[in-house]
Image (spheres, rainbow, N blue to C red):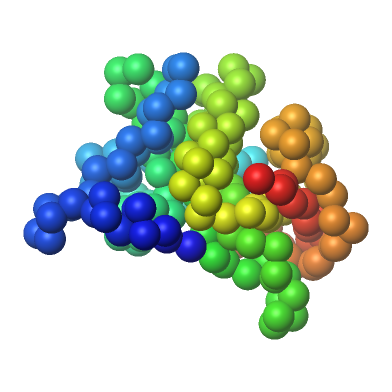
Length: 193
């Protein structure tokens, strides 16, 4: 939900909106075509791709460019997670995508996802990015509840989301991944802002 205050602060027509969410070590900024190599480093790893729905493995440069372009076109949905030198080390998103196959099951709010390149994992960047994005959302009163889900075999994501104050809802669905065969169980969580 966009408030009147946000509408009043919109940039003049014809100029692209450049929102940057700052944390102590990171900037969350719009994705751009020049991010392609670092974008591939985030998602080209087989283990990373297996934990997503939409990323195939192997990830070709053409497919990565198409995904990056689609994400960059979705304003205020996908953000680049950047370190001090402006290098993209991950992607965080807050989408209206539905989790689970049954229609009408998704009623928790927008879906949060975060992916950090394997070379940058284990440093607290994902938790810092989640905290920065959700503080920004809460301050603007855009959402009251945020949804997240992880595959049942993704223990690092489970720990991350618990540390980010998400709670399990008890909802479990069977989900697919372009980098896996068949369906796999996903566990659903929410965070109240």
